[in-house]
Amino acid sequence: MDKETIRKLGKQGRKSVRGEARMLFQEAICKQIRESEAYKKASIILSYQAFGGEVELDALKAFAKEDGKQLAFPFCLDKTTMIALIPESEESWGEDLYGMKVPLLEKSKRVDAADIDLVLTPLVAFDEQCHRTGMGAGIYDRYLPQCTKATIIGIAFEAQKMESIPTDQHDVTLAHIISEKGIYNRK
Image (cartoon, rainbow, N blue to C red):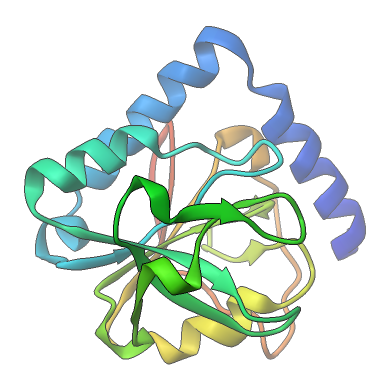
């Protein structure tokens, strides 16, 4: 399958998870993240705000606060450049050009990618070898190599799993992927 077909199927898969099942799956994913060694060792975590049917990590925000973790979120400076920001307060949020909830640059602390311990990345589709397909802009594929000490974990519903994901040289293979069914480890 080509990447466009995989993207279409992956988006359909994540949007097919609805209602109570969606809530239960998201809770299970957040608990697995919290129980992971990468989370336990992390001080600074790059998370994300769910968009377009992505797994919502709302429970993780409460866990991180309880556990004394700093949560950063992506902010796109332009269509190709992403940075990480830690919002100063609840008033530090706004919307970007795509209507996504993002921390505001002027009301947040910028975090150097090399200081991030754990990256939780959304994805459109994945396979058991921890290959991922994103939205197609390559923003995460350009940013993730800068996170030199971070463990990188993809977050998805099992409905987004494919038999095989084609990869290009620039595509970043993840260390792990967490779904409601469990943790996949890079092979």
